Length: 397
Image (cartoon, rainbow, N blue to C red):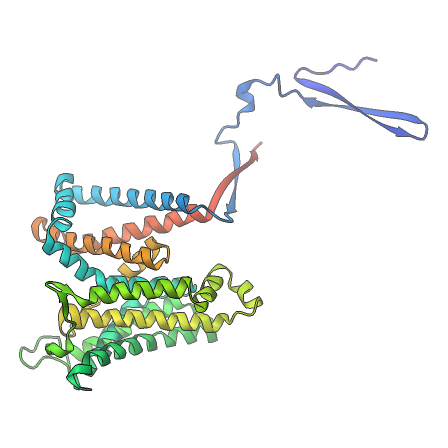
């Protein structure tokens, strides 16, 4: 009997020795060489994909994904502003020509960027330790309250007053992180909820002070009295406040802490794999607690620079917008201190440009906040492509 091999198939014979001689078996395989090209191609709709976790990604690819996401976000923002009546040419003139080309606006950008750098560093450090500190604004509030309490009580001599105000801001900001830290470590309560809710507690406590016993008796507006010269951050040059120098020093200190110190090595170990770090003997709880306290201290110090540097007094909304900006800066910088300083400059330039748009084109401040929200969303979405990839695994029947 003759076996007929169907078209597009190849007969394969397999033989193996046996006790009685040689036995053989045959079967057929598809002949892919004669399969039509169209049949061999897998269409996109017929493919199955698997979501795989990337082991690592090159830094230039990660930078390219981030740059592409920011470009898409900026394109969306430009489209929104154009629908609001601002032309693309006017946007270019305002951002490049006016904000970055005018010396007065450059000083305003640097002045605005100083506390943003500190808040961005605070967010980046806590995020490195896998503690999602969303209470940056509350910690800023308490930093401003601590500094103002020292000023109003005339604690210390005029020569040491500013140093004591800064120290009080550091301590108060750090202490405001203790409650969410204990709630997470002792009861497993998410710090996202606790830190976010504590922002409202701090904000209302601030309102109670500026509408109550700390209200300026001269004009009865909800703010404290003006700080005297010994209680204000001085200028290092004409129009350049020393808060800019403090931001630079803190950036370098944060970089050294993360990349050169032993504690920073522990932080990076915990960030990579907390369970493995604990198995290797790293005191994970102590590391996280120390970084969170440091994060709160930086945010509190940012509140001190705003109240003693920009406003010159404690106001009811001096902290507004900084917490959201800090999260944006940490996301864009991928929790890198040097990158956080650069991103803070860009965000500050966006703030200054937004104020110009408010005045010249009647753009509401809520639209500036919308632009920030869009950038946060696209950067968070880009994180998916840096952590995961889609791989085809076959054809669906």
